[in-house]
Length: 103
Image (cartoon, rainbow, N blue to C red; front, side):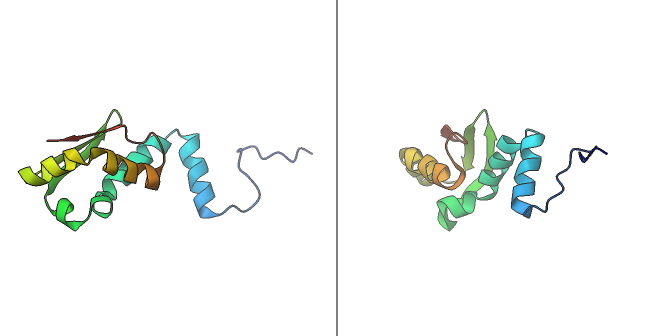
């Protein structure tokens, strides 16, 4: 009798986090999940002041686009672009975001 599971499932119990990561990897959704996590975590990354003046955040081609309602905040964010990207890389890993575009 063949002990191999016909559905390709693992028989041992796995922690939920590990199972979720395996699922994302199997469906090649890791990058998209990380991008959505960055957008969701925007207020935590930049703080309440900047988050309150942010009207839109999205990612396209590994570039983070941020629409701000305040000119001075936009200028400040542009000057500290490297620091924001560094904060994102610390939290989510290298290569999730390669550039920050403020408009």
